[in-house]
Length: 253
Image (cartoon, rainbow, N blue to C red; front, side, top):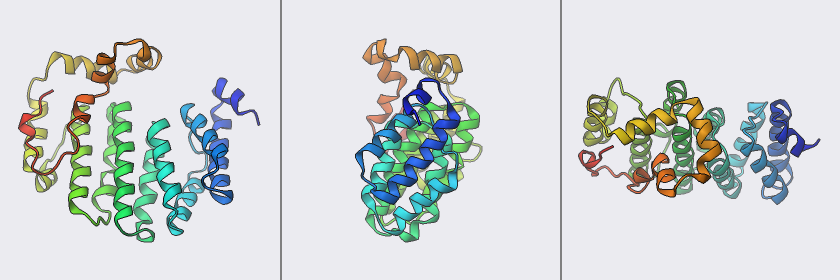
């Protein structure tokens, strides 16, 4: 099967089949095989989706069962680097959460923290309301998982809530957020009722527009670095991690 040809021609059917087959083969033969990871990276760059989600989830479950932390960590890192799929994001978090009893201890906290970086990337890439709804639906996978460290759990939930709010999500109820951080709850409540900067409004308008996204995908390398950083919310990234005592009243957009 000509992978390069499928990528060039954007043959999504072929790409989907290859991605599923490669992940399954990789786990069966040798989870750290360089060639397989290189192929997965190419497919993810081409926006390939798994054609058989149950097969991919079986691979993740098997890795959890045999506590193959190297494979799991590399899988999540690869997704953070090369994947922007909302669907893949949901599948990964679902399986990590449901099979967490197979993988206990502090390493489980670290895997969830890594997965939250994938969540942030997906939020930044898909700021339209339907996509944000799907991302928000994954928040319980973090909140209801078993964490060794409560501080890590709080920091992850705060991080995801902040990026959802910054990208335009309006919370219907901030009570659950107030239980974690009253300061965050007040900020999320006031944010849609206040007037942000013109720069931020332009940023949201560009990122939520399909043509704007196409423009950025094509021309981003040609843009000044300071503009690329602003469009990627690096001023928010620089504040991480958000701890429970962080004063969100000092956060302006």
